[in-house]
Image: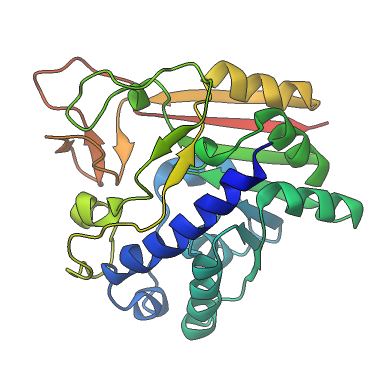
Length: 282
């Protein structure tokens, strides 16, 4: 486990989160007006969450967490970024939607939560989370450890096959993991995605953001992700692949086919852009 790289990523995410939220307008007003940042795929995988306890792992700035709380879940959001958690707490207070947000390295949080006997009916993680994990097996064990018997984990993630391409659709990154991938820092993918990731009021915000902190990512194939959950004692219930990416214009010339679903340009074959899974604890 590379906690040193987790710490570097914390600094990079702190800087990027400020830029990301600068494009999203008055988010509290968006939520007070009944807005939600969830896509249909998340709701399909999670099922009815009303009255259930739910931990949102790597929750970022809390928008999806609050959207789930509005559906009646008792939500705890966890993220490594100080800036993201501080923003999520403010947004909760200003929107009037109740949720608890805890800042911690995910692996340290798992250890503390399991040691304290905390457990949840649902665990949830989505969109760009797997790549920040330096130990996929410890991640699987952590999820199993905080789920109650009969509890379920739902994951919606960008497909690792799509992630072998650079922004210009040239194969560049290894599918199979190895050494951590050092990058210039978490970028402003919200600005690059335009209204794809700003369902409320899209603002210009920070222009030409350059992150002062480098970041480090890890490549995990679907087989490794599924095996980590199975090895932890969970049962795989669903595995779904999608030919579009929700909201994120991560590559050049992506086309919005409606509902903020982005696909490769017409001169390319159909590719798996996301996958989702559901795993349960017996």
